[in-house]
Amino acid sequence: MDASMVDEYAAQSKLLQEFVKIPSVGKAWIFNSKNENTSRAMVSFSQSDLVANKMRKFLLNSHISKGASKSLDFQWSPFPTELTGVSAVIPSPSGEKLLLVRNAEDDSPTKLEVWGPCQLENEIHIPKSVHGSLYTDGWFEGISWNQEETFIAYIAEEPPQPKPVFNDYGYKKDGSSEKDCKSWKGQGDWEENWGETYSKKRIPALFVVNTSSGEVRSVKGIPRSLSVGQVIWAPSSSYCLVFVAWSSDNGFQETPRKLGIKYCYNRPCALYAAPDPFREEPEKSSTYCEVSRVSPQDSDYSWNVLALDKNNILAVSSGLITLPQIYYGLEVSQTGRQWEWQEVLTPFPKPSDKISSIVAEHKFGILKIPVSNPSGKLANESWSLKLVEYSEGLLIVE
Image (cartoon, rainbow, N blue to C red; front, side):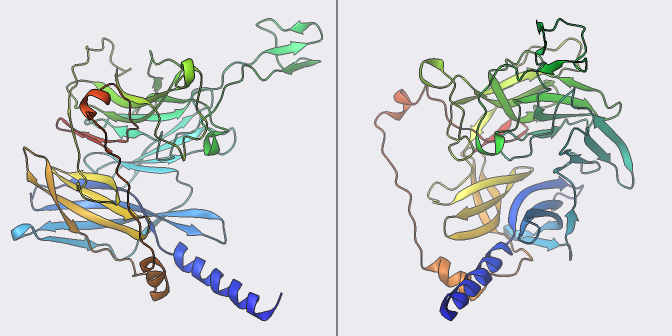
């Protein structure tokens, strides 16, 4: 290898390090205070660690002040808090409790830690016989506190399906031990998975845990042909769960078509509601909502709703050639559900001149295909949904 190639590799390596130093915005939560003009925000970020070959997650807190003429002031904490060994962080609606999810990589139980203001209130160990690891992938993922902060609904891998055991005489009857001499376990029925990062995961299922007793119950009545995700609690008076589900029999003539959902996620899906499994006599669901678009109509960027601040929205916007930027949306029209977006100043350093020049050299556009009579043709179509939050009758869907 000549000297010019060595210099080129060194320059490319340095450029890669500059790119991975740019943090990515994950999630955000906003907690209201007694003062209508102030609130608190907690934002999760992630950053690539090239040496350890993993993503490092950390939290950053901010104090939000709203002044006259719709002015905003975000006061960020001076240093972030890194999360080690934590798969997911979910604060309660009041901000007084915090759930930490620690998924086990082996056959160890999954741990759910419920923290209070100054102490660990409960540590729940859930064995693999109840369910597997919680989904924290950002698509099937769904972890939600109820308004009373007594139950948590979440999506996890279903428990392992029973597998047949054989010996020299063929199939073993029930009651015989798998550890008997000259016996072995079969693989069971083959099932197609969702592909890519889901190749070793079992079907996502819906569970609810009592944060005080640690009891876990699965939500009954959901067929295994549905892969559930993005669960949230409906308003407390309805005692039901709202979630998105994808059918495995979505191919030609209802044949399975599951592979590749990570990068080809525009799959047929639907919204469902199920009763709280801890209620002895579930009431009939009367949940209803209003579906509203929150991103600007003329924007070519990708918008992700992070959190709701009463009637306002905290979101992150990014594009193919732009870095993620946090925006705060102020509701300006209650009838039309329109928001005025203000850029939020963050403590992250600006990208280097090299990265800025590379990004500025590129342009992109979105091709819009007109559809004749859309109301008639699209009325019965299913679209890919991203369920964000359910608050005061407003359902935020991306």
